[in-house]
Image (tube, rainbow, N blue to C red):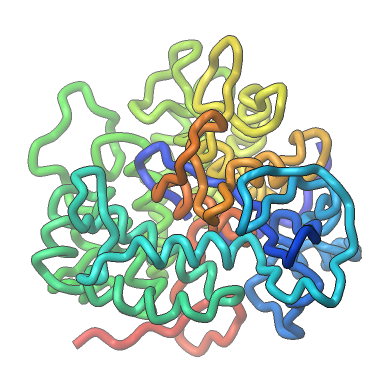
Length: 407
């Protein structure tokens, strides 16, 4: 199994979200082939700092980003229509309205933002959890959708209000970790955001320990634990060795992890496994044998028609969220997700995008889903969690962000 340099790039959420991408607008009947992560020829910025795959693979002699390799093979959807056609075509000069899949998804996402700055949750009301995911997606989309910056600022302002962010973070370490990731993404110190020290909040013992819970973890399950590890690295905190030990004891014989730590056959799922892979890579343990075994486990959940299923099943049915999370994990682990070995995961993810720009959860769904969209955007852009980390003192490296000093 060929490996490329392990790179720390993007995000995720505790729910099984949804994602995917592919979109191209055209005039009249003209349709351009605009693949996942590629751009129509009418939009090719010279300074593409967000397109991290280009930098990642260029260091190995790859002449073009992986996603460009599938650009002409993608099912193209037009903004003005509802049908899809698989075809190759060269955009003409009249196709000036073509936009990237990420811009289309980000535009749809911005339209879902509430006047409060928050994004709606399952209750139909502005929800801090959904908003933290949206912040990360908007950050990832900024290069292709400049209008995302204002939406990002509004979402961060919503989260910084104590009645929103603090109330959410106080419900558990995983929630505090997601808020911390959003804070760092916006350049805010998570040690003083929404009136809380989120580093302390996400590493604090549970007020009510889970009966027969997993020993030595942050939060009440492995998904929370992985989120905390990722958020700690984003904040520039060292990961104690003791925090990694539970990952070794809970990895199943098949190489996967289950959210509840079960090592029973068939218990592991793609979502938890993908998040743990990203946590290990972010913590500087990308070469640990656990990662190799976990990547091998993900291969067992690759659906016959592409994409990844949540867990073992017969037949395997892919969903957008699992596909996006698995794609992020493969990016973090240095795999080539566009290869035949991985069923061209970027293209599989692309098939979930709707003509509106938003992404559906399951292929059979007709309507776009907010959680699917926020999960997909960072994966499309080639980010794995954390999307950005705090710069160390004196550091000027690309990929880090200077935090506003805490008051």
